[in-house]
View 1 (cartoon, helix red, strand yellow):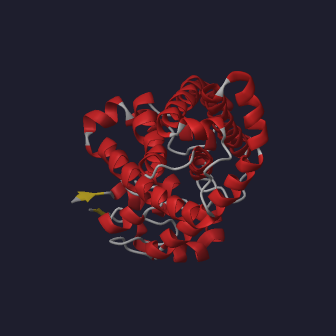
View 2 (cartoon, one colour):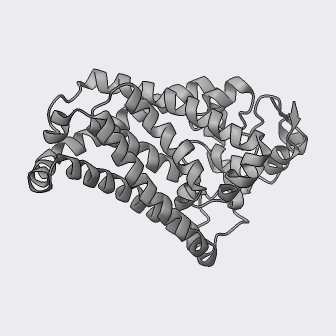
Length: 309
């Protein structure tokens, strides 16, 4: 058992603006309910993005006719990564211009100079995202499907089932690899510490990480599901886009669908290792802002130590 006084202290420093989400924080105490809500939200989001991508099939076909299906698939991955990063940039703007409404760590303000120093590594990981996701598409897709992206599309029920399965696999991979980066002090110092230089993150630093972490944890956690269930490339692109944007949302510094739990991880370090947080609940590392998590005292005693099992 590891005492996490830092987590208690972080909860004690909770800004007044956090009360705007107090009612949702109560819901977050029931992690299984929150997880079920996240699964449903993911299914709906992936279905919507999937329909949008399918509507672009004629454009893909035109590109494939000109440059070939393999190059077209790589360009599709470039488009997905670029769209996700563009959303990440847009979500970063409020923090840089000092918007305080719904901000979690109000007293900490990111600077343009600080972000500028992070840009080279973010750019490198953007390139790695395109390369690795393209390799996954080329290796995991049938040649005929790459030639005709509108062929063999999954039904709505299959797409929903694959999305739910992929989310579970993402959670299993991300939680255990991410926690290993914290538990193993050498790994933390050599790899994961880079990401944690941002204690009050902004959206685009979701991809500010050591390349080993970005590929082995961030990207692998997203790609493992579509590869294992043999998902159609459009399904993989839709899932990747939804979860990449979700990662930027969790790093934006404002209240989003994860109720500030990943932001609290950056502040307190040894809580909330997961993405959907069901494994945090099962392993005892689940903490919520505005209310004590399992093993933590509420109210005036928030600053006391809590146990991260």
